[in-house]
Amino acid sequence: MKYVYAAVFENADEGGYAVSFPDLPGCYSQGETLSGAITMAQSALSQWIEYLIDKKITIPGASEIKEMKYDGAGFVNFVCADVKDGRAVKRTVSIPKWMDDRVSETGLSLSRVLQETLSQRLQ
Image 1: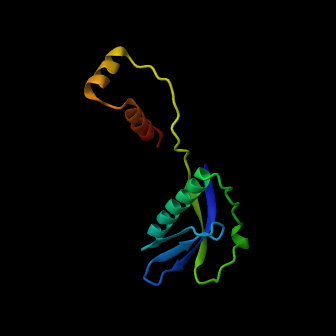
Image 2: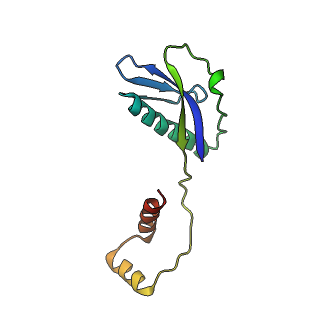
């Protein structure tokens, strides 16, 4: 699922940018450059939402950007996070016998190979 929240970007005392999410108290990030701050903000937002989902905590709604209240020292920008459900599920798959024999001989993990291959194919 995609989540979009307004983030406040401010100049950090030590340089770079500090990022906060007013709708998600305690969710902060920072970056040395604006590009880095945006990337780190996306990561922080994703991890924050994943934590809420994992702990079965209600995910707060996002405020409209015009409703954001901040001291005006920085700027407000939307940050988007794509959160994927990482829980394992069991699936039955079929492979030829010769492949199964070779997998056993080499000690490969079918689950790992399938996950890696699907990750590459689905990007």
